[in-house]
Length: 501
Image (cartoon, rainbow, N blue to C red; front, side):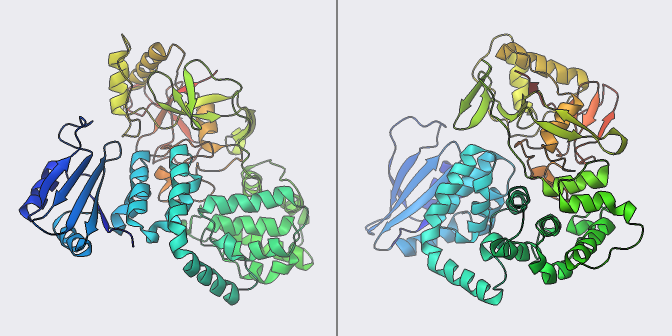
């Protein structure tokens, strides 16, 4: 039997926890003798209580603020229950909030808390985090999930078996793939890799056509057409297309989605097409082969049928960039970067729609934080240490101040770091598939926490971001990747740098 454990809320200091335990008769028997990283916060400690044969083992991870109490001895369970009532500890809701946080540090805290507490209610979220763009998160999620699965294997198998018996025509494994973006990409790679459907793909499509995510359902409609999956016609006819903003449908696309499904049903069932077929030729071509992009509707069809290819890795690294465990960082400041490879991107919309090849560049994972900006401006005369965490709220700057921050970082790193052009910003946000938003083609309330295909984050957070020429991109008010507007240089926005090798 595992020893019962508790995870203390991060804001509870060791001193306060010690007072709470002492007030309930627990005596600090020993603590680690090595100097703590944080004064007054030992990383190990042991508590005992009178003559009771029970011990509390305290451990502290100073990087993630993870505080754990483990209980051993004859009355361990009773002691665990008592301390749980008296000391502020994390519950399932706290762990879920950490796992859903935008900050990498909090997500890692949530993963380790999940592992410590054996919090199986978080398994689905942990499974989704295996595909997190931050390598440290994805690697930790893999390990934590592996530690959780054995206890629930039999129960999970029985649940999947029951689902399959209820819906023998569906793929229950596809339905449980973590993250809607993963399910979308599976369907798009089917379109890319197969000329026709088969019984296994039909089962996946039947599941996708009833998926909770609207874009998965619409992608399945396109996949059924392209793969001539006539066996899924009943599910296709019943598929619910998004009809509201709450379901993620932009008002301009709602009728388009419904008409698209009806047309695919007509084509697959062999029914005659309506008159004035010439107006439908671009759409019909997209249903039978790669979309011929001419305008916004055909670009949407392209995005719904094109898998994200992450492109080539950089050929050599600039002296200012280092790679560690799959993550790129600036060598002296430690700020994290993402790689936008030299591949073609669809940019713009309507009359500005065009295809542009990226030169290949590094871009800041998140906008420069207040702490990092202050450090850069102070350290540009002589670097001291590193910039620290770059996951905090971005620093608001005028255009001139934004250029000063980039110039200070350039002096520190010995290489030109500058504001992105509006095209570079859009490439970093949009990825190679021409999607409308950094996270896909559906509207979302949680867009601020979603990364682009290249792993670039906080693109539509509260502050817009500067691009060269006093242009603003992104931000909560203009989440479409293609939007940019010119403002006065005194306007306030966030700073995101690029480095072109």
